[in-house]
Image (tube, rainbow, N blue to C red):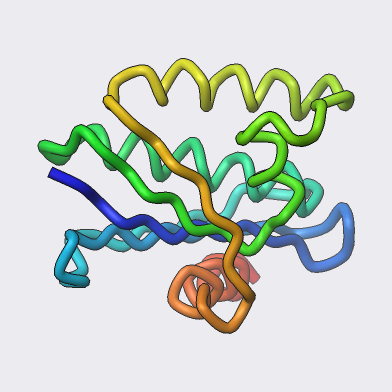
Length: 133
């Protein structure tokens, strides 16, 4: 089974209060799960990685062997596809966690999408930050 996942992470200020959001859909577009979480004060990039980690952990609870992960963070997508090196130690540690979680799936593809195509996940981020308010 293939899942389509949208993830987003954001911080108000950089660093600042941060949240993450994940929407998991089946191949027909039916929403299977939504997750969001306030993660404290951190940077946008850390929040993006934390959202990706949550997405992979939650996807593992479904009977999926293939994932398409849509993110509006071009940096994280390019790091995950090997186009960019990960130089920042905090991001290296988070990327290692992603790679570990990734092993449970036969195939994980990463796709950069415009922010407008990631509104569901972005809304969850903002709800998490607002609720922590």
